[in-house]
Image (cartoon, helix red, strand yellow):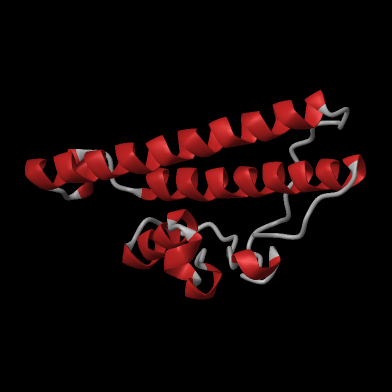
Length: 135
């Protein structure tokens, strides 16, 4: 868990950071999903094409969830008197850009390495950082 928020200004900063992070995650998921082959003329057999389309659908679903999270963060930001924005850093950014979260911002084609990175994004803290396990 992060530092305790004790003022409205800190809450606004945290919500802006959350929106920025969700925006960056969404962009990465969408880029990966649309990097996959989509048509039979791209050299896939029909059964491969169907499998790839299912993968793209799943990655797009996660991107849509990140869009929902972005909307929630921006709505909360508005509710506490903050000004919503769609800022995010340019990509790529090192994994330490967001501190201990370890989220590397980069647009990569959908491959095994990218999927493994996405799994780390979505894993509960207890799995990726055992030292944070609740006692």
